[in-house]
Image (cartoon, rainbow, N blue to C red; front, side):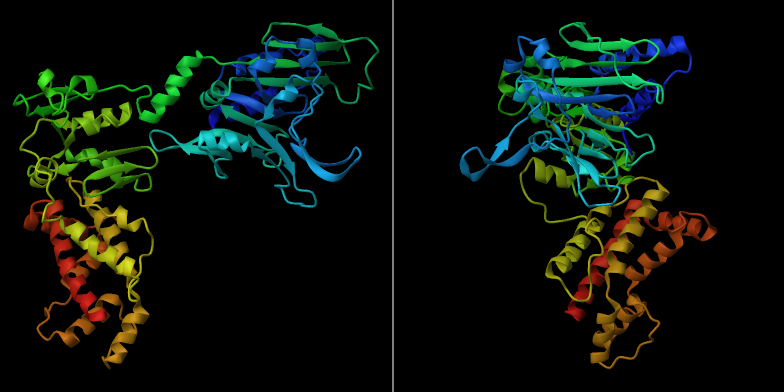
Length: 568
């Protein structure tokens, strides 16, 4: 799907290319004022036309070094003759030579523009009859510097922004893909401006608007066109024959909108994560001064051990505490976010570490890590910020302040270690159905029924769906253990374990059976009385969904180790 600004430009080109029926309106249309206004307005927008072709509309832009462009030679520039379908290079022979060489560069009939280079290249696959016979390639240098990649579903060269959302940087519309007969390629301006600043160049747009009414125009008179030098930014040659036709052909120069030093500063700040940085004050425990107060994520408003002797600022390792619901946003979009044991990763955007949960069920992390989040993300955490009910977790204290490894893990992490070892060892009786299943499972921490249900659903997909029935049946056949062909993995595994462990639990694989039962009953997300009763029983026995999930994970960990021993 094209971005909004790109689609609006297509609509604008269609609208200005409509031929008026009224004679007076037609003569006004021949002045090409609407076409010129579109160019002028677009030069200040965030979606810049680099190539556009409509019924009466033609625009094509190239990059030209400023040292070759200025001072402006308007007659030399206005004599261009070029489109993006010209080849960038060709094999040459002759001229008294018996070899073959490559000739590169632009040939535009303008010596000034010949010093520039294209951003896009129109290609035609001769002999191919498919709808993608004509397509556009992007200048490789630009694609690499902008770190963008073609995504067909967006019809654009894209990258992820600071929020982990896919953003269109160069958007392409082809008349092969729509019914508008419009080809349009637009560039996001800020990224293009960075390139122009770093190459000390300007964008030079060539335009040609030949306006006429089909069926009533047979050719031009011999009158010479009129040169109109509107400004140093836009100038053109225009010829108008009232009641018949007109052409407006010229140049528009688009230079930097920000001071070049500002552009460079923004580029460098973008590398360091300081670009447009804003900060938030969180209620946190200032353990240096031993009280609860608001502490800003601004690095100048807190300190570290090495600089503390020169000030009385709170430590940047001051913990802030949050309602557990702060994590639900990230659990709701598991393609975009990955929640690790003590961290959250937003794809290609940001990383938050130091997370843990204290005895009171509160999520906590440190001021120095919160400052790495985008401002809007900091506001999300601020909306869940609360006073601490207890200290940080024992694990966080040992890890972060004593600098030691903990000798205990969350039950889910212990369970995942077993599954990861199966995957890395490529055991023949179990396989990982999808790589992202290892990161999708998270321990529920809130009172949300959906979070609890989703956790079991993801865990079941990871563990139960991974068992290979044919391999388990072959193992049973080796020991001549009888089984029903309709029996599934859990029942088959129970038969195998009972064969070698006479003292095995008479109830069978309770953890796996509980997991499968919950998966089946909770699939509809509490749509029936059975689901309500399951929820009630879980809370009655374990007090919280978190405790119940950890209990089941403990059962599963023990059973998977037994299964591993039997099947290895």
